Image 1 (tube, rainbow, N blue to C red):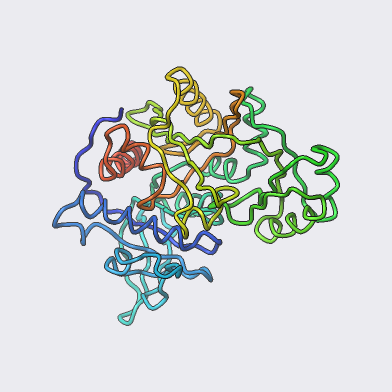
Image 2: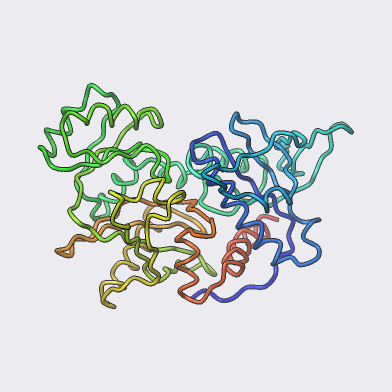
Length: 371
């Protein structure tokens, strides 16, 4: 288990929101992370945390911490980044990293050399924000550009993992609705899942049980991603997850967690995750010790094979016959109050505040090495 870490003190920019469909989930993750950063910093937190929200149309704004702390889902309404705050831009000067903040008093430079991007999906996990922060000379928490790009596309992720012998199930990919017959050629008339190759939070995913629904499901997925992945459904699988974390140069795995869907949900979709309490989240999962250790070992292998850094969540499917399939990898998993990543570490005795402090420590060590 990771060592418990002390209070953070380095100024940090919390970056959240984004232009993709997971904008609101990012806001909720930012709220949880900000609470932990505040707790870890004590009375001096206001001087050392900069909240930078990326609005749905792409503009960057300075957001008051009190607004972030009040983000919530209310009557199925999701939070969004407010655009009333001063505009923010990265200062592209690695010698003096920081932000330019434009408000009523003009343009002000705010020095900052450390960032925590809590951005899910488009613009957040695909290497875009990582590349921008690199160019600006700002050290950040999370995987670097190459691993972010690789893991953000489910097709390339599976291709790399299959090359190192990791079972990723039966799948194919298409980039146009007219290619729907390819699914039949590969899978026949069995149940399939059709997903955007990029993105998360189960947005745009359809479970298809009829040939007539394939083209429409591909169209839905293509509205989110230029490429679509089609996977053969595993009958009655157990959905298992492992949180992976870098500690002192070592890669460690959390206890295995399990998502148990409630009866009226077909799969763990966006509604089940965030709006309707559609699943029981079990930590740790009720598994034989050898099975758990095998899953943890594969999770660490996946993390290393993809070049991930600091943290990631690896999702598995376990068939009733014991076949284990890696489903996907999230380099910036959800950090909401109900997210599995933090719950799995809690099962190992690591509090949310200690987890955030460990992630910050990782980045601070890199920042020290660069200075």
